Length: 364
Image 1 (cartoon, rainbow, N blue to C red):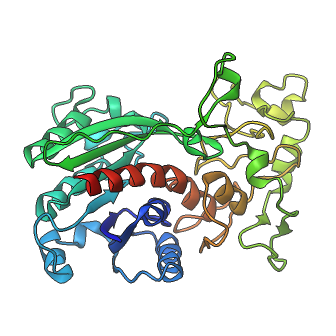
Image 2 (image 1 turned 90 degrees about the horizontal axis):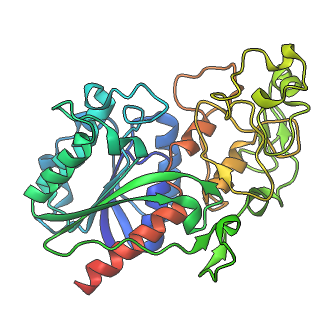
């Protein structure tokens, strides 16, 4: 196994993909309590024993390097997906003015100290147009790339769609990969394709996986308070939300159901609120899972459960979540299970990128 340091590790989506590709974590960092507990459980399951950190701002890279007894350029990969709210197209777009945006620079700070053979960063597409310290559109990304290049890395980046790599979800994210030296990273070719856009041409690989492929074999979920037959497969849909989703067809959103009573639709905007009170479609990939809104089952009047979220994200069935499962109107101090999954990197996508990094490092 090759060595990896994982920052902003979450519940271990990126780590799961790295591990399947042949990388083993020597250090993981995660601040959220429930994500941290989920990550620790994953590490024990995989029989890896990395050091753990909490607040990344309290971790000094040079001291960590000494603890890990790593020399310059000895670490194989530094990987992480810093919090994305500052760059999100649906967020406030504060970019580097937001403390969460500045966390992206932690990847550069750790890279300067460890000089790993490879650096892998995952981010939302909003990073492509995010403003850096100079206030120019797109300079946040160009600044990160310039910093890595100044350290001796050859950097390449690309927007990858999770569905193209065997994840039943239309999730687009930016992946930045820097290889130390003069070799430019070549991203993996897609393994799946959209059958609705094939135009009758011969396609390599398999058709996109669908929501039915992901969750069609799961039993009915249990109600909150009842014994869980399947971990995290619990229905906590509030009664009012059950009423409001009733009558919404498969694959559609409530805002566009003008035949339903106004009291049911309320003030939803048919142009803007297309993800609120949204049913998934059985025979298509899911839309991008989001933390603020829970999607609905294709045919049942309920939210998708965290277990169904895990399946749609491509996690193996033995990946266990810790933390509360909340209703739409609830609030918790730390992240609930739906948000924990939505924030994670889908393991099959992480694996596809990590396998290519492993291969190119080995060839080098």
